[in-house]
Image 1 (cartoon, rainbow, N blue to C red):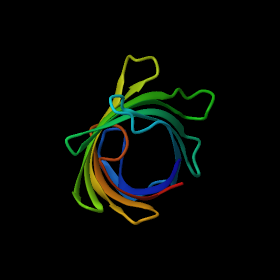
Image 2 (cartoon, helix red, strand yellow):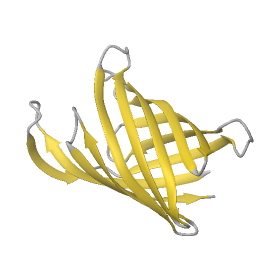
Image 3 (tube, rainbow, N blue to C red):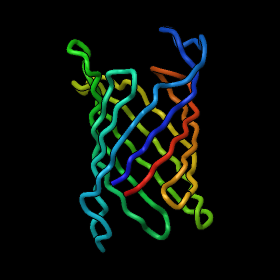
Image 4 (cartoon, rainbow, N blue to C red):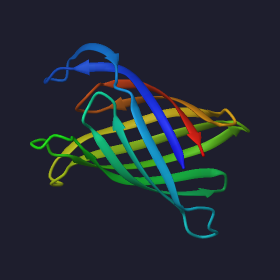
Length: 164
């Protein structure tokens, strides 16, 4: 099982998409549990759940991972809830690749999409480029994310993940 905490720093946009400021994002906390690991032919399967402190948002995701020729491939799908009775949630989908550059340093790239929970509207898409450093007890992650619509235009993200 892994536990992670992350915080971001990004730009804020108004309803027309204009940048109006920048600041810190809420602290995000997540748990990930492995359901199937190290099978010869099947991918690793995990489930994760998370929430943002100081906000009512939460998420649940399923993750399938497989390493092929030293490249880690990850597919995830899940639901993001708002926690408020009158606010609908959204479905999230993602594809990621990672490659170990040195023994303790990994590079990763990720594409994500978010759809309204009725499936009729693409809420937004984003891409992340970053990496992580193995600290022995876990890892330190650092990356940059670009968005195409709702939310900040860009975001710098960092976090710690510890496995147990």
